Length: 267
Image (cartoon, rainbow, N blue to C red):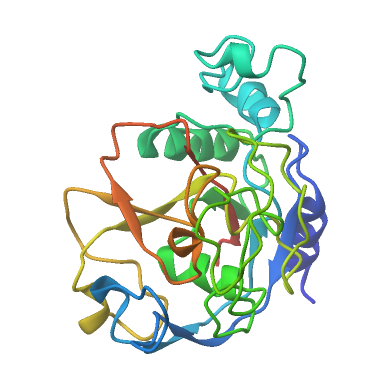
């Protein structure tokens, strides 16, 4: 391990804003969903092999309200003491709820401010690419969810109706909850299914999988929307599948949309 790798490993365990990171090994995976997968959509096809050529670090949890406030100096989350959903959280401490109502541009600005506070210039923060996000979510599994082919609201913060290949109708919070409230996947990452949607770096194209590079794809060069992944507290399970692709206006934030970040070594 060279000195740069030692430096990033130390900072990636917990950075100066108490953001926990996990090292993700480089490797191949199958991106997309097979046509045989229940509720698969056309924009998740064709399945294609992707190579992530370098190890990288990703935040173990979505960025929380406290972390966002510490960096940005404000917190516009709906489910917060100053948000429009304050009545839902009157008796709750929401510091560890994921930040939401954040636009794609605000998520990128968060990363820029982190980079300005990074004196070493050995690593930089950014949003994950769509390929990196799915690679992290799947954690070496090619099933509908990183838990297998069944999912319900006892396994993640989602809407309880219409569980996936399951008859269990579990709890419904009706809002976000503390990050890390459910079991992590095999990479040690939490909240990859449910709680909040998560912005990705890429522009969105429904046909991109047909032309995607097989090595470190960064999405189309241009577009009108940005991708987001993972589903949220108000989503049925089918929208929270590993391969499900959402997209939205990068200028607008919603009360079910947040983000997590990547830390990469600058070579």
